[in-house]
Image (cartoon, rainbow, N blue to C red):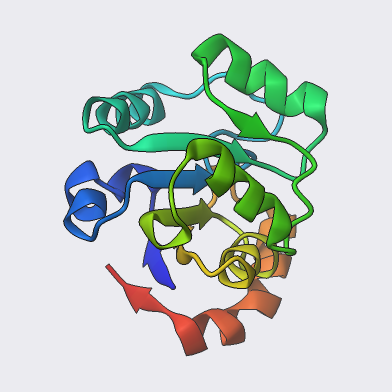
Length: 156
């Protein structure tokens, strides 16, 4: 598991240099704050850079269909809602829909117990990012996640 401060630090050069052709990304607090239906300028630029580099992006979220569709449809992004993370089946379905192999795909998210475990369960490389919005619940959750993160962390 790799760790970054922000998803925008996951560059197309780093991805393609390691043979990755696709990124599966969590939505809430990874790409945008909760209930935010569009990416900020930095995330929009990151998405455009991925597309320009020929790296596929698909949103894989445990959120309801309505939430994920509201963010993804205006951007023309493929998505999978109610993905069942930390189980890996949803991620494997996303990989299949993108037409790539698991070893060519990286899972990016802000939560260890859902996003990172789902990635590992699907046999994907994983990247943990700091959440877009930090508050009480994040701090509490991170307190429990930290020992697990520290055992598997590799800073990029």
